[in-house]
Amino acid sequence: MIEILSPAEVDRARKTGALVGTILQTLKGRAEVGTNLLDIDQWTKAMITDAGAQSCYVDYEASFGRGPFGHYICTAVNDAVLHGKPTNYTLADGDLLTLDLAVLLDGVAADAAISFVVGDTQPAESLALIAATERALAAGIAAATPGARVGDISNAIGTVLKAAGYPINLDFGGHGIGSTMHQDPHVANTGRPGRGYKLRPGLLLALEPWVMQDTADLITDPDGWTLRSATGARTAHTEHTIAITETGPEILTLPAN
Image 1 (tube, rainbow, N blue to C red):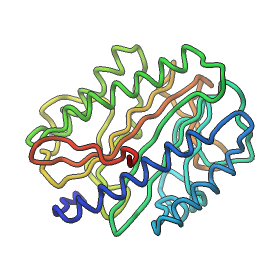
Image 2: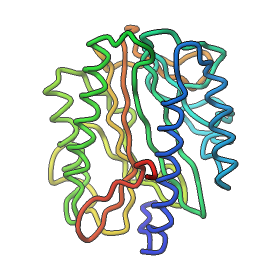
Image 3: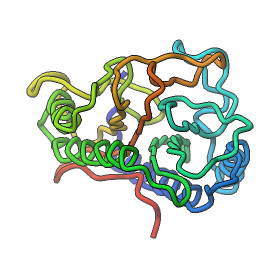
Image 4: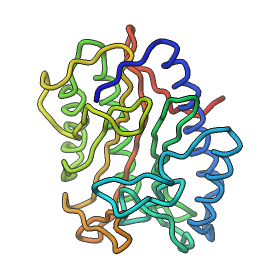
């Protein structure tokens, strides 16, 4: 299903997006050496509840996972990149942490992810991974103009990631979003320009470049959800929900001022 939102629904999506962005930045500020991933999950639950919102994850079941996810945020560390289930792991200096969050507020969902390095040790290879996904996301957003096509976004993202020298996995990518978290169209992280669905005002997309340092192959943890690089290499993942408007793309998941 491809859902086109009304102006009133897009306005509600702005509130949802601001909540997601604010929660992620709050968690980034609290995540430090010695922080436990289960504490991050509980902090997330409390902030979602306090805002009168609902988690898109806790009861979520999908063909690529096993059973309900059971947590309020995805926490992926180092070689984990997607769908990371919070565990009893304590963050160490130099860990690369990705936080991925989706919530529903007033009937509209928003989804975003950030990657950052915890502590004083900031490995250059980790920072390069993060920077590449951030540049790719910016390029994808810039390409998301009304009348453009999904392939234009994919091509913009892929061009940046390829130039940085990273392999690109096509199993998971961006997606439409609206009254539910995952909708069509699928937005691959590389593709051919001029192909795919034509972008229309009112369409919401979650764009999410993610890479692994030296492989495009994933392995799944025994928990049935957490995806890791097959080589154990580090990974990064950056995501925003955007709205296609008459005047161009609007980022919805920036933190509230």
